[in-house]
Image (tube, rainbow, N blue to C red; front, side):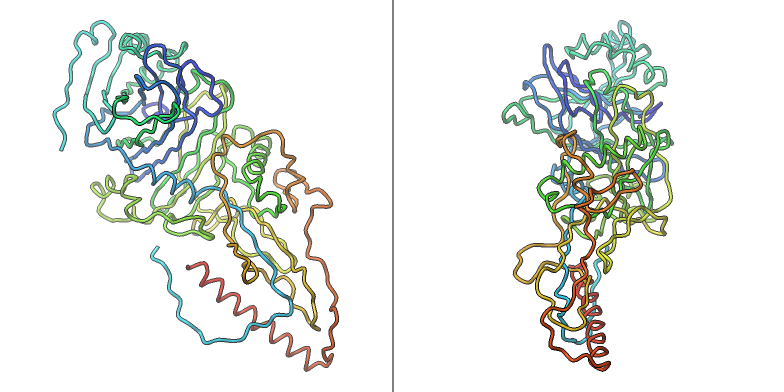
Length: 508
């Protein structure tokens, strides 16, 4: 993190990477060529307590892996844990941009009334530190403040008074750090930051096809600043890097304070082909946002972590919250408010122009990416202020009714799930692994079915999807006022039934 905050970007060793953003500074054994190609960061924050959880995949030889993270204080063994990998897949799916589909119901269908039913709503011991290293302190101006092992990680916590000495210490201890790392270490050393070094024992790690499967690592600490360092990752940057930060905080949304902020355009109507090109579509949309707001950190999701609408997967339960840091907060706070966590997903893409680490600030709630299509097939776009965080990146495929309309007063624009026997669900895929999505090939205007004025993108003329007006076909119905009134009443009953059915479906 910036100043005395926690570090959050990787340096891959001596090997160009296409997606090398990460929490920490990676080093490898002598002669190793190593790069980090997938990152997930979760920050839990309450008061001055921060819990950082990191998951990473590595590709390289099974020898001498290590991770270096600047931390504001000396971290003890009871502040470090390894975590199950499954919780990261769960949080990534929950906050990821999502694609949904709606089908227009038969305009002549009248659902029979039924009795009102009751709705059910979901509830939403450490050994002594082995300090020492007097020789290191004299020769390199580096001191070993703590030393312990957790899982497959052998950990030391260092302090240093000279960045050149720290650079030499790492090299002397067989860490082949990238050339040019010392200037990036210097501001952390000058700020009095400690360095958490988690070295990996290759004998405790499973490798498959050159890829190491490492346990996610969690570190907790106390600091008045809520900062995530990213500058260390610039030492080996070969171009743009993607960083996704998930922030969990009690009923609070966070943005980055020292860079521009933007929200992803949401509730866009898209063409059916986006179903098979969702990652490519979303990468193009994201890049357009950065063209409109350069250097922005983009909010992609902010919602209570125990609910979602629609749900692409399970929500976070109390075990997940405890795994990601709730147990730390429980030992510090007695009001239990941390169980009502807001999950905010922030997405940054940056290159070597970064001069500062990411500083976070609490901001007001927002909503967007909700609701069903209106009768003419349009959606409410954009973001609005709200009392509760209900914002998501959501993209919509519409399927207008294509069958016969054989009644006098068809009720158009009633949207819901697929026709009976369609075998599909309203909630479809999420856009994951966005750092690896094809870029520069998708023309966004050809994939959207509605304009996106907030970023200046117009849908191609033949792609727009207004609901086509339809005249009754083959209707032998009476045209009396009574008949029209009866049809209107039937349509009203249908709308009420759809609303009830939709609420039950959302709860389920």
